[in-house]
Amino acid sequence: MSAIGLGTWQFGSMEWGYGKEYLEKDAIDIVHRALDLGINVLDTAEIYGFGKSERAVGRAIDGRRDDAFIATKVFPVLPIAPVVEQRGRASARRLRVETIDLYQIHQPNALVPLSQQMEGMRRLQQAGVVRHVGVSNFSLDRWRAAEAEFGSPVISNQVQYSLAVRAPDRKGLMQHAADNERIVIAYSPLAQGFLAAKYDATNAPGGVRAANSLFLPENLERGHELITALREVAKTHDATPAQIALAWVIRRKNVVAIPGASSVAQLEKNAAAADIELTDDEDARLTTASDNFNPISGPRALPKLLRKRLPF
Ligand SMILES: NC(=O)c1ccc[n+]([C@@H]2O[C@H](COP(=O)([O-])OP(=O)(O)OC[C@H]3O[C@@H](n4cnc5c(N)ncnc54)[C@H](OP(=O)(O)O)[C@@H]3O)[C@@H](O)[C@H]2O)c1
Image (cartoon, rainbow, N blue to C red; front, side):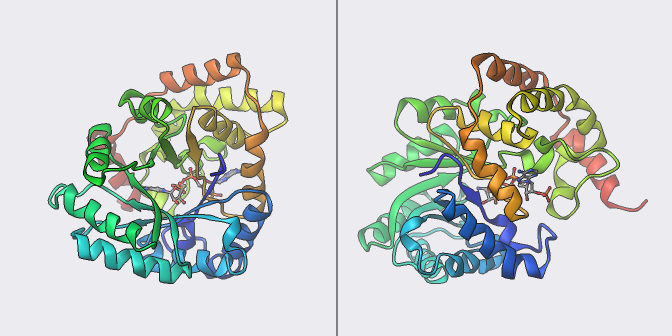
């Protein structure tokens, strides 16, 4: 797996507001350029655009299957074994592949026992529809429990991780991956563009990101120290803040970052981030700025988010 992968939630396009042409043309160009540049991890999910993202990835890898490591996810509405099995086969069909390289449970489901979910995964693996099994948004305990049920490695846990969101550090996930030859797949490694240092209170993104509390004016303000650190480190590497944010993520052991991209140019920048070598001092400076970043979130952010979305 390449240290930088490509997230393709954006290919569902509606949620991100990138438009039809993005899905039909740019998405394909982005995947082709990613493969050209040695990015092999392509992360999608059945839920992204209700199959549109998987179909776009399938179209894009036509003739280049062997260059790609395809990761997709089952959305666990009723993840009993036969349903997981059927959904895995449907994803493989949309992706036009015989075997999905990594099949992940998108989110925990507290109602259906893990034994059922993992039994579905086992059947898919035995049938050759799935090569490796992973989870997403799982706590460390639940990840371990999934692995115990599965009886062999559940190789990865895809979680939100970036300089702006460090919960996986505090919750032991990063250490677990580093110590046990498991992988953390870091989603939203750019905090959905927050770490690209291009948004401010007068220019915040809409679409799905209108619900991301990081883009509240108060949090953009609170992010000043972190964004300044990113800008300054970026200057010494002749890089962009977004590239430095990615370089910081993949400097952690056994971590793959899967940034999404709204253009080929962004994809190229993200691929190049794999070659940036941060010094220990730079790493420490960014980590401290991240430690000091204390955005409002959860119930405190909700009224402000609602006010932002409603025109009164
Ligand atoms: N498992 C899960 O529950 C889960 C949840 C969320 C995401 N994911 C996966 O993780 C992937 C990535 O997460 P994400 O899309 O939420 O957030 P992200 O990768 O942190 O942010 C992607 C956005 O940042 C901007 N961007 C990307 N590269 C840039 C660059 N070089 N310079 C400046 N801006 C740049 C683009 O938006 P603009 O240009 O429009 O600003 C892009 O759409 C998704 O595509 C999906 O595959 C998984």
